[in-house]
Image (tube, rainbow, N blue to C red; front, side, top):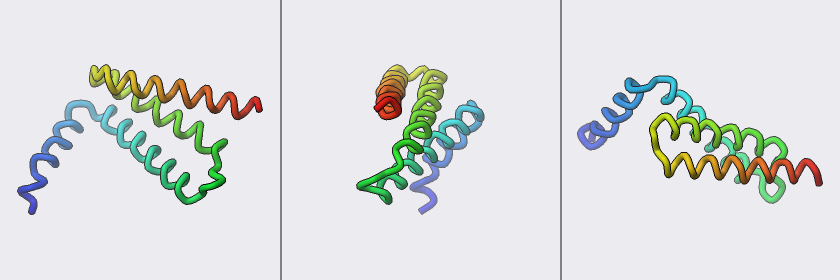
Length: 96
């Protein structure tokens, strides 16, 4: 069974060794993403958007930085757009 996951585990180790700060930032952004998703799922139909939006936006911004350091245009474009869209949503929510 370990043989099946060995290449993936090695890839994770290599990624960690190549840029430890980026690895930690991506891990934090992943935890934020999962945490926000679980919170949303547990609190529908009235999720605490005022609390979730800033946290989600922070996670997207962290992912954008990580994408930039990886030189991944697609991921960078995606997370910049998500950060922008959700920031606009937060501002609209605060002003209404």
